[in-house]
Image (cartoon, rainbow, N blue to C red):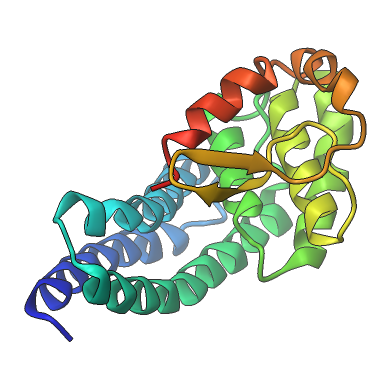
Length: 211
């Protein structure tokens, strides 16, 4: 392993250890409703830290061999982190139900959704959360876009066309492509109904993540 890869991963591991220690301390008081927003916020921060580290090879100018090393070793860290977040979110739901906007706040709802959205190792749980969110959209207790993103995530995982065009892949540098969509002609109308902008704007934004 190159020195630069080793240093970057050591920084990552130290930040993860600190974050997981904070999460564990909060989880000891999971029965208290007032703990839930802060716990979910720390879990979300860890989730985002993991994903933001994907930019390290670009930011630090890694060569091709270093990029391969780094990507393989970082990806190996994803599964246990996402798994621990998913298991803890299940405990939150079993204790308090979904952290709705009405009972908690928009941040708690968003943070819980993000963790479920990234629980790709547990598709059954994602489908369960999708069923939980659907009626909450009608009552205003979750953001409509959360249901839309998770709907697409589950559909693509099950090899079905997505509805809102939120899921895709990089076809090359600066070129993000959505996976198959149910009705491309109506996708902007459907996106607008859940508070999402035109798909052309979304694609333009996602293009920036394809290096």
